[in-house]
Amino acid sequence: MIDLGGAKLDLWKEIFGDENIRHCFTCGRCIAGCPASEARNPLRIRSLVRKVLLGLEDELLDDDTPWSCVTCTRCEEMCPMGVRPFEVGLAVRKWQCANDETRIPPAIVDLYTRGYSMPVGANPDLREELGLERELPLITSDPELHEKWKRVLMSVKLIKDNDYMFGE
Amino acid sequence: MQYGLFLGCNMPAHRPDIERSIRATLTDLHVDFVDVDGYVCCPGFGTFPAVDQDAQLVTNAWNYAIAEEKGIDLITQCGSCYSSMKLGRATLLEKEGTKDRINKLLAVGDKKYEGRANMRHMIDLLYSEVGPERIREAIKTPLTGARIVVQYPCHTRFPSELVGFDESSGRPDRLRKLVEALGATVETYSLEYGCCGGSGGFHKTSAAEAESFTKRKYEAIRDETECEAIVGSCITCVMYMDRVQKLISTEEEKFSYPVFDYNQLLALCMGYPPSQVARISVEPREAFIQKYFG
Image (cartoon, rainbow over all chains, first blue to last red):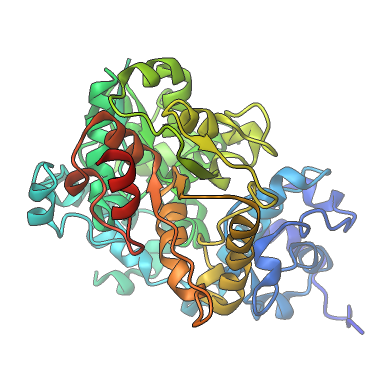
């Protein structure tokens, strides 16, 4: 039994904002063909939308399932009501991060410090053997531009609020 | 028309041989392209799009702003880069007030995005701007008789109104036609249009479940086709379809299909040496390359 006593009825506005989410009638087309519906904690995107609409704040804060999304975006195509379920999943992740900094993926620090989530530019010898230029024109190749990039990111509220993560 | 080659993160970091094949083949096909100096991560869906909308959009807009300064559009092979940039652009341009808000953040770094620069995917560029006919004429060694299975990148299919270029998102065929232009036979099978399962958080949170998802695809390929090689055009599909085969193989049954990016196969057909354009893989590709390219 779901206890709706503590439900926050306007939660959908806080998490997603788009009125279309209220058109969901739980048909389940978003789940049909969703790879992550087979995850260890199955992502049931329809149930996630329902939790948002019912305002089940505590349950949503603890819900790990949006992080299993494969990002194929198939659910967005399948939804007959324009709910944009893939975007709802990302919005839940964002809302979780805003309420619990331990949810923030450490990979974002790499985007600040070196511009990329992977070690781009670390293989000049291999590049030369392949017939490529040794160096790529990366953000780190231009210190002045890299400084500008960091300033841009630091002007984003969530980044500034968590600036300790970035060594700033 | 000039394009900015948006390499993303995975290709230059892990598979620069694919980058080599893209640069070689586009040059031979007379596609005018330049590097995108100072580009950053698209951003991938597991980074800013999972954390904060302004951080996500300002990153998309930074990359577009660099393209716009040069007056060009971007091209990419990576499905995630393509999708992140296309979905981000739609929000920037269509959601009232968003572009102005993001431009205020960008101004701190002396950048501005007016909304002109756009992103295109490699399959779309090769099919619509070059065309199968010119590709057929440009190759030296056709893949006559080769039986190929194609992996269509989800990120170029859904949602079709924002990212699509194929006539049908359910049954895309442009990558198939590009492979057929190399002289190969493309095999069809029941799970042909299924996701590879390798992107996002699926494998990270649920390795066993994600592997059994992809194993079904490989079992269908085994049972329903005479597949000799798999061809994709998305770095995630290509790397995952390659590395997962060891993970789903057992003592009784090994899966070991060669996996190529489309531009790699095209470069081989154009006569480029495998040591440059098809050098890095988990599953061996030498037998396939030897059979068709000597």
